[in-house]
Image (cartoon, rainbow, N blue to C red; front, side):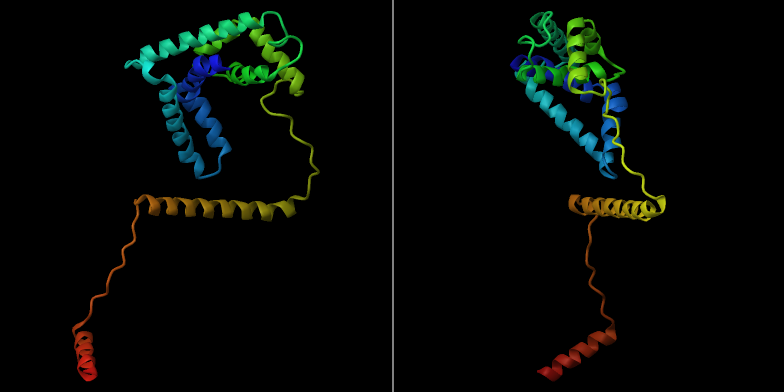
Length: 221
């Protein structure tokens, strides 16, 4: 597990969050489609910055100044890590024999995503697909514990269809509430961040009002 966190995790972060093609065409698209408006406009970018900071922490002092050298070093170590996993697994079904352990769940969580996703820039993915026992290992776990044959999402549940006339008002109401909530969130963000500020202006007094005020003050004295 420590080997995966040290050697493989930085490359997974780089693959899905730092690589421009993968981030724009895959990662950001995932989260933008899953998040409601208006969160889908700024949350993926914030998450990308958080992963960039996490990558800097994982690399630590050994991080070279040149980004190309860093990328080359990270991918080299990740390829070595996958090769070691392949050698350790051998021809076994799981890493400790015929029964799965917590290590298998941990390894599968790293490998399945890298193996299944269609990446426009898949440097490490190509190396993983060349390790046939690891590919068979992931396929076996998918078919064993995910009975929809390794599909990206489980098959939808069959629910009784109700009359459209009853669903339509609720659907329109939810859409209106979503738009209002989005507008409220945008206005609140603008006020809290200082983009928009509200200043209270003091109304100017006319000469007649000023004279009347002075007369009232004289009467009080």
